[in-house]
Length: 138
Image 1 (tube, rainbow, N blue to C red):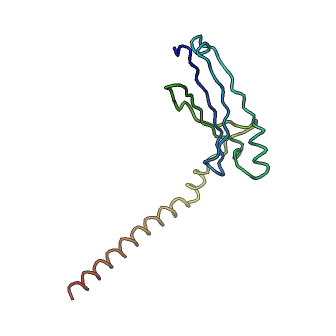
Image 2 (cartoon, rainbow, N blue to C red):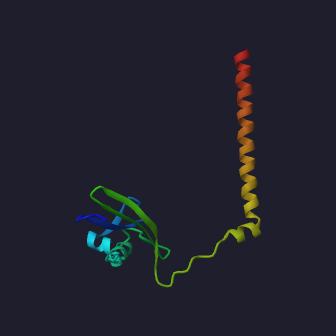
Image 3 (tube, rainbow, N blue to C red):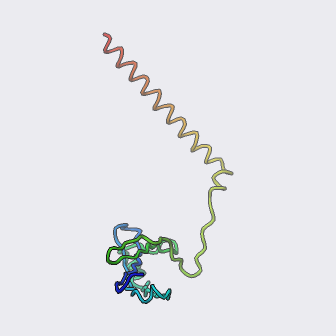
């Protein structure tokens, strides 16, 4: 498949406090492993990010989840492979609050407010354009 070359698998955990910050964990995969369809491992030390979070320097773990991006690259080869979340043990997805918004009528208040705002902006623009055209004709 790749001959005698190697590729690198990179797993990047993203900091949600500073999105440009990341912690990378890499593993080099030889062509022998790829050609034979064998599996490999990437050691990930989650204590590195949890320690930074506890010090307040970052926010890798948000609500029990850690966002990651995985890619592979090598000589003449680069590919964005996958993205997702690692969940802490016992994590459950919070229930949706959309039904509460619909039943409380708040969603209708928000929608009506947006429509009224659009109408107000339209009326103001029309009034200004009329006053500008009157000034030009005088």
